[in-house]
Image (cartoon, rainbow, N blue to C red; front, top):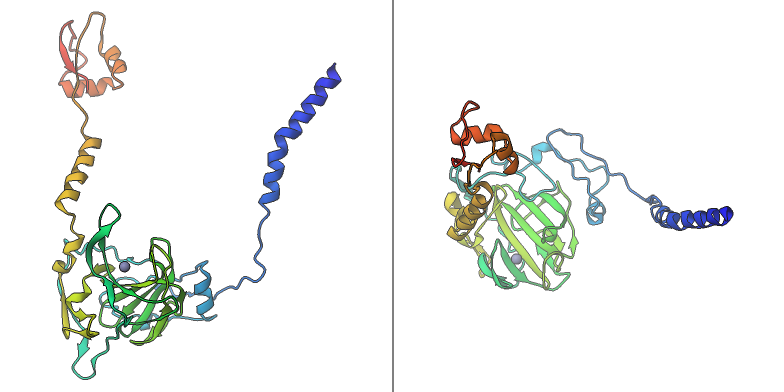
Length: 324
Ligand SMILES: [Zn+2]
């Protein structure tokens, strides 16, 4: 009888431990056989992008070093980051002095090249998005997967990697004129962070990666990490720059201000969390301050505070006190 019980116990232990055995089988460490170690930058001012994105490793030459002196528009930007779209985190709506950026110099003309020569399919501003509306922070150009996409101005590539937020394979270039340009939904990246590019250089091949319903280029012009309407100074139909000098002020960032509806709902939810309903209680026989505090999940100190009473106050039957 005892041996049968033991037998059953052993079977039970083996049965119970089976999933653990399976777990041990599936979590064998995977050792990459041909992993490449990329030379990291040891310059303190430069943040090195060590990515797991294979495109990035493919395009970036081994041992590549980027000199901080080559950063464009150093006088405007406080950092050089090779991962984030907006590492500057400045509030462009509230505190910001207007600045004039020169797109065309007096000698050499304008070095603007249209990133994609096809027609624009969607512009900057609100557009339909499912059941509602959503702000579109760039210009879309229709293209076929594999079509080349060109750098809009001279500059240095800051970001070239996959963006999980929706841009897919994406490139950001910092330009000497003070702007940054963003290109999204690539099928292939052809540049690496720190690479110097001229206007018209191919930076990647068009595609439909990220949140995209079909092959197209999503193109943005940003100032200090925030998108602005590029049609104010570039005509994408004629592929030309409309103004030699562009003044960027808080007006360019009106689209970042919350709408009255957004403010209403923000306040609504804020009040929902902070406002507690005031509650009163009529003292009964045998009640004391401790029993009332326990009853309403509060403290004696809090009850003294909100009622303006102290420990010498006698709580007579029938007296109304505030408990919340
Ligand atoms: Zn777009």
